[in-house]
Length: 165
Image (tube, rainbow, N blue to C red):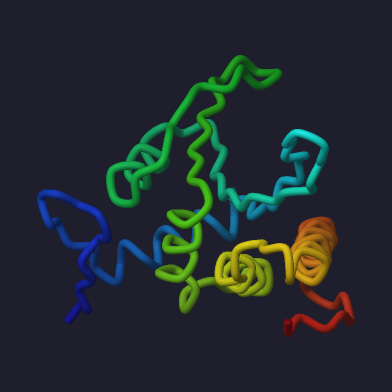
């Protein structure tokens, strides 16, 4: 019997079952990316480094990413074609919604669980204030670096790095 979880923010209160979560985790492990983007937040007299989380699944079969969009929200766009002429479909979800998605599928991830764990911790960091700006920016930068490194090495297996923050 499947456990059922209510999808956050859904007006129709549709439910996501455990098999949906395990399917989403499988797609994430095989075709997905967990990334932290760095940009400069410009204010008068200041350029402050800022970071945002996003998750994407990119593939040439539209049906699975349409399913993910229907269940978890986000955006779905066509992103060009492959060398063989197949359309590439790109599903993305950002910031807090990305963290909610990762939290829901985390127990089912096999390859990208380290990236997801860091991303979830990233989303739970406090907002930047005048008193914590250096500490929080340093943590965010380190988390971005670590996720980037994990993304480049066998889905995070055998990097020998510490993952706790």
